[in-house]
Image (cartoon, rainbow, N blue to C red; front, side, top):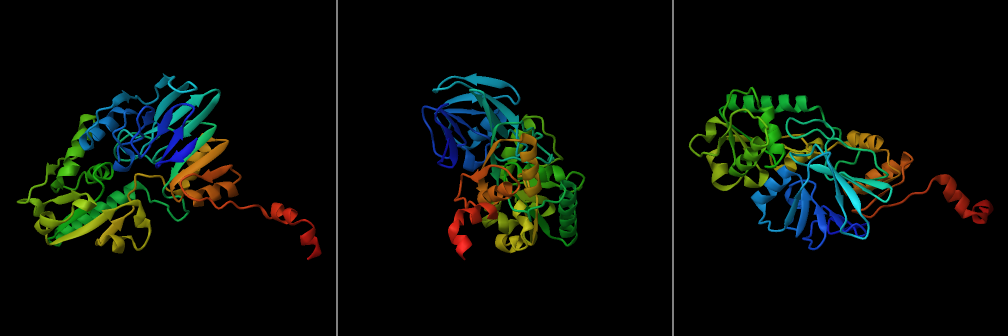
Length: 342
């Protein structure tokens, strides 16, 4: 196994996991459809919703293998055959973990995941494995997210107070995943919900796969000031920004746990709505999977690997330099005679 191009390569199996560089000739498992995880590979495997989102964003002409969650598929295109099972990851609609079995050993690759059930998408369903490769975006202890119900009330109060002041509430969230969580969170607000074009198109895919939402409309300059506007951060500029004035803005991101988040984002407020697991949930996933070996990727990978080693796990980071530490007993024994002389 090797970490390369932002993804993982299992050369004996002829399999890539979330390669960020376009691959040809070998199969690539795509965990979900966020832009930093998708490429127009020659051979891709993913869930049906993930392929729908990919087709919105890429010109995909390669071979596609649609994977159903919890249905094992056998592959034999490398030096060793293997069985791969997609498991719901709870990150966004269609997100999946890869459970790989080969030659009597098993591996679970999480991709991005969230253990806490969200307002949309599927519930995360990990499985025991010998080796765990997990994302650790929020792998430090102070990242502790409040319950989603609390964030929902905060979002509703922000909208109601802003509208009562005669201003337009603009909620900034990524168009795939976070925006749909917000739409569902606003159910019962009794004010029109208006979506940026990109959010509107993505939400239509959610409805295609059976997700229900309170009524919403596509962006319209003429009526936007009477609505709650949901917009991706990069889309809040130019004519759209001018049209909603006067307004108040709120960013929805897990990084809102950091007190300086709203200043970095230049918004009036920031709320910790995330589609990733927080620190406590990362630890709980390790307990659920009960692996012999753990590899961490993304975010605070080295920090979380160090935490796991302190708890007695065999763990190391793949995506960044990993500062290994030795227990004091081993260190002093290694000093040998020199230590005794001093």
